[in-house]
Each structure stands twice: as structure tokens, then as C-alpha cells.
Length: 121
Image (tube, rainbow, N blue to C red):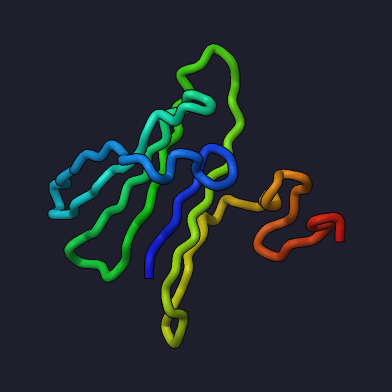
């Protein structure tokens, strides 16, 4: 298993570089590790938090993106989890997401059932 995180656009250009990290302890006994960087392409501060809770068999993943620039910046963020699927396996996506971009941001598709054009097909 494993997980690949990519920002700000396509495959993370600084993927070979160390990331900043901080640990966060919660009152309920949960622990979060935040990893991230201020990426050099657009100057966005991007952080991803991984939380384990004492009463749950799940890994919570949260993201924070901060734009300290004077102008808006776009970004593309995705994660590729690599786990064995099987009985009882579930992938939960935020319920408020209704549209997604294709890989190159050429087209917008409905989510969770993609419609429309994908790579001009």
C-alpha cells in the first residue's frame, strides 16, 4: 500500500524534496501529523493532515491550501491511495463534491458518475 499526493499542478515537482511536518495531539487522544510545503511554482502553502483516532479503524485525511499571493492561483490536488480492495473496503469522498476536472484540466465531468468528454472522447 501507499499514497501519492500531488500539488499544485499534476505530479508534484518537488516530490523528491523533504517536506515540513508538525504533530498535533487532540484532547480525545487522536493524533494528527501535518505534512506540506510552500511550493515554489505558485507560492501556495499546501498541507495534508493524517489523523488516527483511538476509537476508529480509519485514517482521516484533510488538506489545507493557503494562497499568500496578491492574485488568485489555481491548483490541482489529488491523492492516489494504493490499498487492496475487497469485502468491507470503502472509499469515502466528500459529499459536497459534484464536479471534477480531468487530468489536464481540459474538461469538467459530473461526480460521482462522469459524463461529457474525457480526453476528447
